Structure formats: structure tokens, C-alpha cells
Image (cartoon, rainbow, N blue to C red; front, side):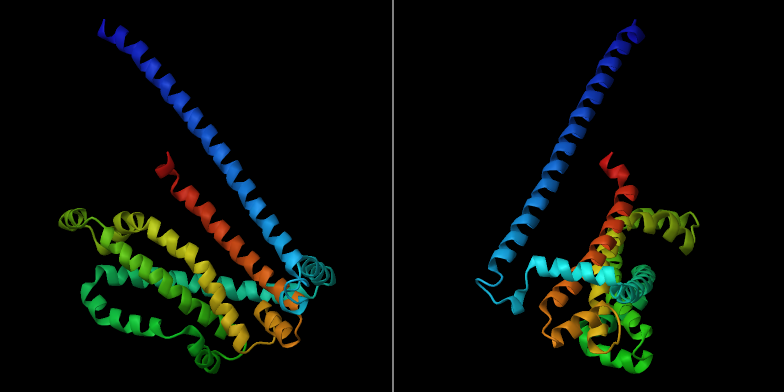
Length: 279
């Protein structure tokens, strides 16, 4: 009798859960559509205000206008002159980003588990991080030259500190009781890192990866501004020297597009890895 009674109750509960799930999905869909429409509206308002302000409130040589910038972007891609600069900046961005993220992750985990090394090295790392990266750019140029190496080094150092501090601070969230239990059971350092620490650090790592995209771009552009003969940063600097306002804005838009693409890829990875939290 108890089994017969419980079966309809479970069916009703399952049906209610399914209905709640459908309603929640419908609300998320509506909310996502509203967000997208809001973003489009903001872009339209900004572009419209920019177009109206150009030439009437501010001279065009200062702020250009969306129409001129769009024409410049079209000519850059149609003529093919931008592809070389775009490829060079993308290569510098990817190499610096990967090197800095991997290095920051490794050092953050090591110092988070090795307290003596952390006590020795943390003040030194904080001192290096306090130095403005643009002040170190000439030093990297002396070490690695005017080519690819110096830009990658600046970007990698910038991303390194972003990832390091995210991971290092995230180590404080690792359950010490569980860590001690696994150590008592004979788990080695590699097992602890792979089975406990890295899963626990998923959110800080993803936050560091997402923030690191824009910081990597800052490092690349700083290097290209200081000394370069190619790249989007060089194109922006050269356009500035020539008082070419549409060229400056076109270069900035391309730099923004690279960052948006990078952040979008990390967001997709985040949704995949953290799907269990939404469920």
C-alpha cells in the first residue's frame, strides 16, 4: 500500500519539478533577449550621439564620426593592409597570454602550498608588480629586441600577476580539513593538486583567465607604442602622429574586437566547466 501511495506522489513531484524547470528556462530566455536588445539600444544611442556631436559640438579631427570610421575599416580590410598588423598583434596577444596564465597558475599553486617560499617571495613579487609596466617596457626592449619577443614578454608579465594573485588568494578557499585528511591517507603533492586544489580553484582560475585577456592586450599595445614597426598598436600610434582620427578609432575598434573575442571564448569555457553550478 505504501508503495502504491508513494508512486503517484513521486509522479506529481516530478511533474511539478519539470514544470518549474520549463518556467525557469522560459524566464532565462526572456531575460537573455531583453539583455541583448538593451545592448543593441545602447550601441545605437552611442553611435547616434557620436555622429551628431561630430562637427557640431566637437571638431571632427578630435572625435571623427562613425561613418568615417566605418569607411576606414572597410578600406583597411578591402585593401588588405590591416591583415598583417592584425595577425602580428594576435600572435603577440596569444603567446603572452598563454605564457603569463600558465606561469601565474603554477607559481600561485606552488606558493599557496609552500608557505616558506610564499613568505620569502610574496613581498618581492608585490614589489615587481607595483612597478608600472610601461616603465619596464624599455628594459624588455633591451633584452628581447624590437620584434615579437619584447611584446610577448610585457604581455606575459602583465597576465602573470593577474593569474598569480587570483590563484594564490583562491588557495585560501581550499578546505584545510580535507587537505589534511588526504595527506594522512598518503596522497602526494601531485594527487592533492590534481584531485583537490585545481577543482577548488576553478572559479578563481576562470576569473584570472577572463581578466587576463584585457591585461594581455594592454601589455602588447604598450610594447607596440614604445617601439615597433608593425601591429595594431603601431598603427594607432602612427595614425595619431599623422592626426588621422578615423585611423585611430579604427585601430581602437580592432583592438576591442580582439579582446571581446578572447573574453567570449573564456566565457564559453566557463559556462561549460561550471554547468553543474547552474544545474
